[in-house]
Image (cartoon, helix red, strand yellow):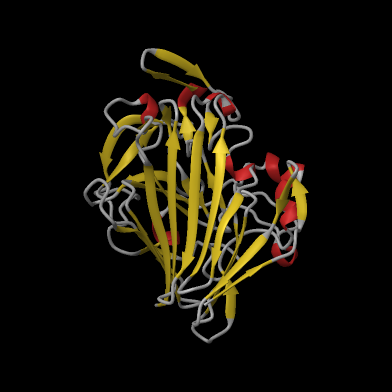
Length: 347
């Protein structure tokens, strides 16, 4: 097992930005930056032994702070928070008090606001190559940041195992009651280029969250049976979807709340690469990247609609405004914990 730390790449928000590369004995290589806890590359041998980078991103970390990229709201490979996905009308009520939030996706808040966790420089806390390559970052989200109450201390660890599994574990504590809902926003393309329309996808979920036309959940829980959201068995995306819309939908996983289990699977017949996602979260947001619009990406590529797909494991979207959904409120003395892993094999 090996972990390599780059020299300081540049400074952002007066903090040093690094890139850390985790390697295992099977040829997997994952590069992660303390800028946004971004997974910048995920290199995997395909069915012919050729290495393929299966995540979208940029060759140079500086591009992740380019204004044109930030305005695209792509969140390529980053950790998003303090609250993943949309909070309706950028406001919530907690203990009889209303909290207006920054509205970066009017009239809603998306993925934590104008400067969410994806744009912060995280502090490297621990770096280890034995027995597995492991990396730990921390970040203090101060009281009032993007409108959220409480000083929230967050820690995230990445661990690359010899069974070709990248395990991400997140913890948080607060000094005031506050909503917390974190996720990793990686875009995968198991061919390494082109679109993901030929990918096969499986999501073990019998129900999905109903949503308004602006993609904010409306509180409804709907059955996938006889709909284009039924991925309980593996289906090729291009054979079931509406190509005008793609997918941007939250699925309730068929497992007990808090239980560790499979959230999704995807594979490509072309590369032979299979991705399995495991989590202890109750839902997964399946997004096929309809709104991707990034130029000058890896090897000069331009990303457009459907160049990558996301499996964002998280609590129920907009739960802070829907009392019937499981609570996403963290209180002093409690610890928020979330685990997700990406496991790679050949199909």
